[in-house]
Length: 465
Image 1 (cartoon, one colour):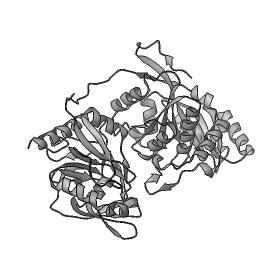
Image 2 (cartoon, rainbow, N blue to C red; image 1 turned 120 degrees about the horizontal axis):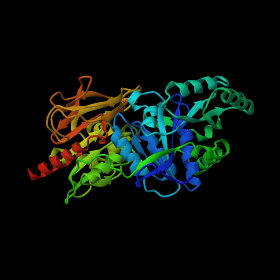
Image 3 (tube, one colour; image 1 turned 90 degrees about the vertical axis):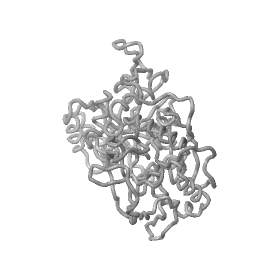
Image 4 (cartoon, rainbow, N blue to C red; image 1 turned 120 degrees about the vertical axis):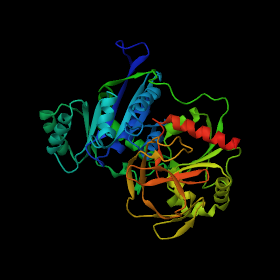
């Protein structure tokens, strides 16, 4: 389906087929359904642009695996409404014919208030496709759908896909009940099929870079979607307006000289918001990717170091054995080099990491601390750290935005280590040793670009002495 010119708007607006795939609950199967639809539409030759509602790192990597396109996180609470709209526009506007926007929701459709899938669909004026797990019900799913349809009239539930359907009789019972009582268009009945299930672990599904679905599985998923889901009906549900309009001027300055930011990127350190990397580049950073797992030295000419989150606990032995890299990073930090580390990156900068078997692994040793893995989730949720002092991320009192999700705990931290921000629950974090700062929060700079500018200026000041 071709984008349609919106004659009611300016010449810089178009309307693009788009929809949000939401679920009634977590575990309804919306990720598998989303991946199948992304892959099937891509196989048809469409330019499929994926997005993810919420702060998740894993689903966007799976989207990229099947489409070859960066999937942006759209989170009204963490990123801000303006960022979400601008990013939606930037990814979709001017892509030519055959473009379609697909947003994967988070949790149940209405879960999360401001950060919910429903709130995002409303903000982007986007139709919703609801995925309902029909595994243990028949006619009763019509009541579930009806409840979702009437709960919030602003949310446009235009289509429904029933997942994990068992038989033709099962289909007949569901169809009859839905057609008698509901408004949403039935777009498909997807069968139970474990061949398409992606393996998971403590932080969620496997990353797209790990190719959790091989070529045969992906081809089978595409064939199943083509057979069981009405893709033409899906594409005709509705459109969203996209524009080349910029809603505000960026606070980032245009610079003639760029700083080189070394970014740890491999399987132990794979949790990065792609739009953060874009913002860093826009701020004047040249990104130098390297692997703490495999490389023996830091990138030449670097001006600062960024260690994101990921799975250092799964690669603790190998990271520990790479003494050359651990030493290089420790020397950089001890020499006054600027470092920002988030979650897994912070864990790597501690003196040791204790795994679930109780084995201690030597890490980089920048922070005089020990972190220990737990079998249960330690902390989860949105965070708004407030800076306690002027620092590399800005001025005292300024607020940053991010998310925290980890299974490890700090078992030991030298009490003399200072912290640069305070959280809403009163905890102080953002541990600082020299010019190295680390903590568990994954920052998103969507509504704090000025703090990225402050980060750049801080590095420049450190170099000037």
